[in-house]
Image 1 (cartoon, rainbow, N blue to C red):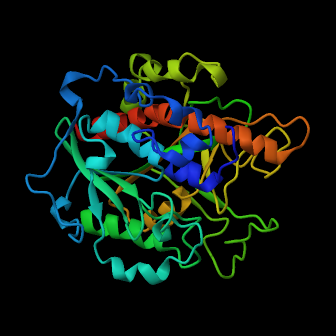
Image 2 (image 1 turned 120 degrees about the vertical axis):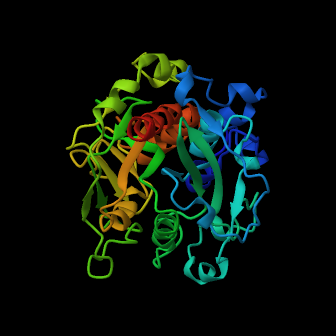
Amino acid sequence: MANKIDTTDLRLNFNPEKLQERFKAAGVKAALIAKTSDRLPSPVPWPAASQPKPAPLKTAPAETDDLTKFKGYDAVVVTYTSAAAAALATMFTPGYPTSAWYEYRHNIAAYIPLVTGGKAPFNATTKDARYYHSLGLYFPCTIGKAKVLLFKSGLHLDHDGPAIPYRKLMDELLQTIQPKIFITAGTGGGIGTEVALGDVVIAGLTKFYCPKLPGKEQFADKTKYPCNADSYKTTPVPAKALTAIIPALTSVNATWIHEYNPRAVPKIWSAATNAIVTTDFFAFDDSQNTYKLQGLGLACDMGDAMVGNVMHGDPNTKWFAIRNASDPQIPNPTNDIKTAGDLSDRIYSDYGVFTSAASVIASWAIIDSIIN
């Protein structure tokens, strides 16, 4: 990238469906690709009987409508970043990009005083302000006979402030829809040298990691935030789902990430001991282990353990946390974390949407194996 750009803005808001001027001005490689089809995942050969299909509503709902019309749906799939949502829309709702998804602002007045973070997209009045006072976007689809609601969150655990409105939103989705399956999926950072760019971690558990680092102590006080350091087990992955994640599906978009990807086919990590680590600041693994992530899990994100905090009290819903490595462990031979962070940002912006294809496929396989 020609100019440094805010990491939070890049990772949350860069949308490969739509070329945003600030990212083009910053020299973000993916924002300079003119052809839309070259910025989004390629189609994969889904089995005909369970090919994802968009299921638009006959009448577009009002932004203030609740989600009770989806009560009893088989599955909910939640993602956080614009890049991951673009991949989800491209593969699950072809013909309906996220710009065609429905806006969700139900009971927005209850959330406005809760979101106090200075970098929260919910409060952004500058730039493209896409998620200003928005709880997110949603769209229904089908996978075989399974009815699925896709949801791109407009809230974010790390940026919305100490009231944690993100937890309230996840609980709202769960209680309103009462799905059989709840999946969180999308971009994350690989931890350790064995996790390659594009690999997928289907977690056996999620855990919080909120260290007391200078300037990064949002949830470090366990007396104030009892979730800190807690872990939550997910539902075991069905063997049928793992069998369905075949190279014919996952290799298609692996070809886009060859620069930093040593594998022709992404590896799926699914052991019960494989953890996704939720941090309360943007962290990534580097060869110096600057943020002390190594040994804690195989991927880091900024949200899944809070979903676990919501889900652990619900024995009736199967819950899966899925992260694709949108950036691998970053080489840092000179112990320069800023330069390493710049490289992490570049890899994410170049390849995040393509690595997300594999976590979308994993989500499909889980839903298909349980419902169909």
